[in-house]
Image (tube, rainbow, N blue to C red; front, side, top):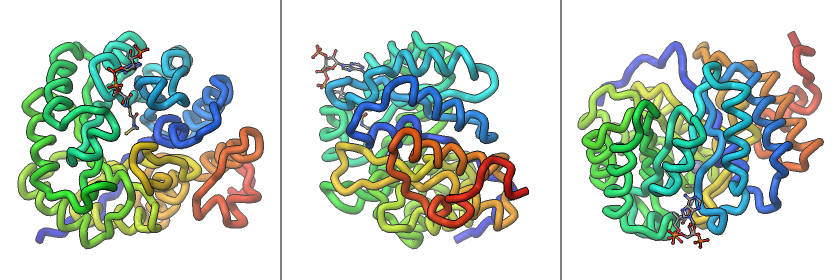
Length: 310
Ligand code: COA
Ligand code: ZN
């Protein structure tokens, strides 16, 4: 196995407004979503998953996707790369009409989770993704491979199932691929094992990893992935998140925890952790969201106001 030196820089994509908000049962008023998104946009992040164009019956929280996206495009287009998750053609139509920069088509590597999440077989989702690739024009297409390590219903997922989705994504002309530990059960040894197979097959392709912290292993998994040369990660401010169709899934790796660890290791992120903490405190105190991050629970997290600790 070839270990890379740790990267000097990692890309952290902020997914709280999509993965984080989708896990909150009570509807977050659109203006609150927009206020949090604006706060996060000022933290130094370069890309954000702003919403998802999904059935409001499946995820009522995302019913205001078009409005949220319109506000984002109006304020941040050209400054911050926007991403919107889609599960089908209908979602692609909504996303394309919104002016989003990247569509993020989600397909699970495991049949059981793909059925639970999108009511389609993996093959049906792949075929639909191919149609979306054919109509994307200048909008970029990312394919997110959910349950890339383990499935809540079927257990461990063989790397071949992940490779099947990635192969089809590349053949269709996808511009990026994310691999997700949807339920956060992967450990560093497991992550290393699967990602070594992926590296072997796809070389140094800049995949993104999407890690959940259900068992407190997300940062350890990040380090394991960096050791194999992976340098792009999703994270959610406040550690919010979780797929409602993946029993047992808990929050994403918290942005502030990832940034804190990376910067302490001398790995640049471009993100101001104090600004993230300031937004996270507002999410909790003004909007009642439940925060789940290590850093937010420290003295720094509880007391810092933007710039107070320089
Ligand atoms: N956006 C908005 N509405 C959509 C939609 C989309 N992308 N796709 C379907 N719909 C609507 C349809 O118009 C239909 O509405 P109606 O009942 O008022 O006529 C309804 O949703 C059902 O449509 P159908 O095509 O039968 O979809 P389905 O019931 O098979 O559900 C999905 C499939 C993919 C739409 C749904 O499961 C979904 O949105 N899943 C997203 C899951 C998700 O976001 N998970 C978390 C992220 S990993
Ligand atoms: Zn997720």
